[in-house]
Image (cartoon, rainbow, N blue to C red; front, side):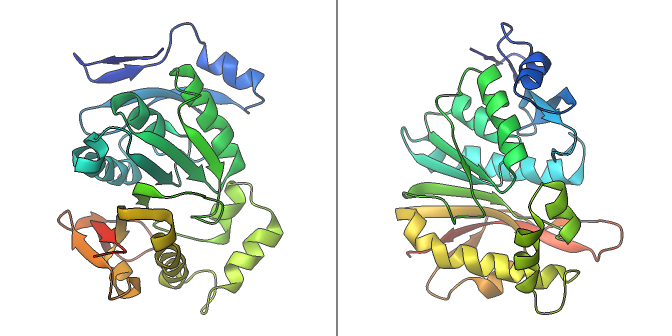
Length: 259
């Protein structure tokens, strides 16, 4: 089993495994090892692959993911035994792996990229939790069954066709996504509006009677939350600054489909 070293807050992988060799054996292209920031105080070792997205530890994406996971670890549901937690868009799965090792939760993780899920399963294996994390290939909640006490989603910042191409999605799927846009593939808010509306539509079916969604998103999401849902902000505005886009303020929202 991998070890959570509480002295330096680093979750190291099982030393009986060579992460890169294991990844190569699984057919992962050009694997490299790296350290992933789970929270501001906890990091975990892992493997990633060329062509599979994983944020660098000091990037803006990493900082927003860290803020969201700190909200997750402080949430009362995370501390309760046997709570069912779902992570949407888990990528290479190190957030799901860390959550499994540090809590008593039953963790399921999804991603739209099959390649990301292949790497995620390797990361869970090198940390000894491959049989404890349930990985599902899914676009949002489309292929998810059952109900969850807590759903976690670090919403995308910038969406273009190139993002999906890098994830290995077929052209037909990309074209279908883009047909949902009203003003073309470069309209960030329009696509995210479609995404948020789909998520809000399916949320009541995928959450338990007291279930919650914790989401890192810009304030634009609030116009897509049905009036009967409960919404509260769990953080101060966080500035997202990216070249070629406008500055946007993001918050962590807790959304309940049953108030």
